[in-house]
Amino acid sequence: MRKTTALIAAIALLASLTACASGPGTNGCAPAVSSGDASSAVTATGTFGKAPKVNFPTPLYTKTSEKSQLIAGKGAPIQDGQPVGLDVTILNGVNGQVLQTTSYTAGSFSLVTAGKSTIPAVTEALRCATVGSRIAIVGSPQDSHSGQADATNGIGKNDSFVYVVDVKSAYLAKANGADQIPQNGMPPVVTAADGTPGISIPSSTAPKTLQTTVLKQGSGAKVKSGNYVIVQYTGVSWSDKSVFDSTWQGHQASVVQTGSQSLSTGLSKALDGQRVGSQVLVVAPPKDAAVADGTGKAPTGATVVYVVDILGIAQ
Image 1: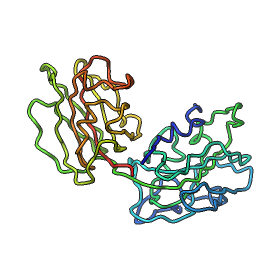
Image 2 (image 1 turned 90 degrees about the horizontal axis):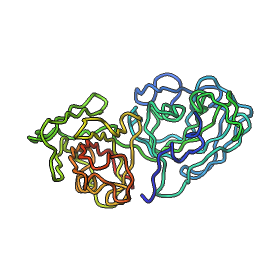
Image 3 (image 1 turned 45 degrees about the horizontal axis):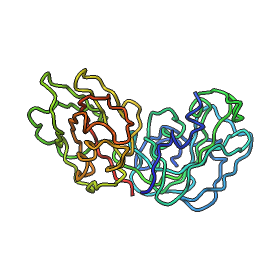
Image 4 (image 1 turned 180 degrees about the vertical axis):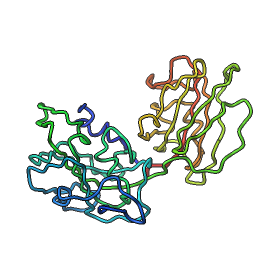
């Protein structure tokens, strides 16, 4: 894996704007988005993983998002909360104009999390898809661009978007490792059914050195320095007990590179050697919480607590 981006970042146009058949899906999976006349009208020729040639009659409108399967994949159906690696071509359904594409290069993909998000036309349509599948999505105006016109990019408030998505990979929705005995003196952590952690900060003085403990012991591949790791995490400031960053709140998993300047030394050390499926609790004093290149969301000079779910390693 040489480069992985979040779809919201890769599809800059969408960020600036403020298959399964109908009925039960494969292996009993119930899709959130079903097939319809609009999605059935979309064709996309070409090899999976390569930029497709997309065709559909224009104008193509829908009031409700639809999806149809163009190439069948294999494996278990994707469920809400799973991070998914994909390539996508996005077009305006009114005139067929290409709005954005990902790179379609080997070792690169965009990352989204199935289920709720700011671009539900894609993320909700991923439910019940399988790795190796190509799906055609016709997103409603509300699900694609919140029903907001964008004259600069030639988008009307009632325009539907057409997405052709190649599903390249899928990862754990949350840490699934075996529960471990809590370590005395470390902040207690409780986990909701969807994996969201709750962290209680003790009234004691914050540790002066980096502290790491495994809350759930996974059995997957081992993280090595330089790996791109798919994670969900929550960060809390020790001093005021406030959450300063959480991927769970945004319903979007993240990708971090261990040993890079974009990740704090504390988190790099804590993740190195851990296995996929693990949940790791990290207490990092200021020198270990700061990011080497001076960026990041950790409060300046603060001791911070992270709970990190290791969901996969991008290859």
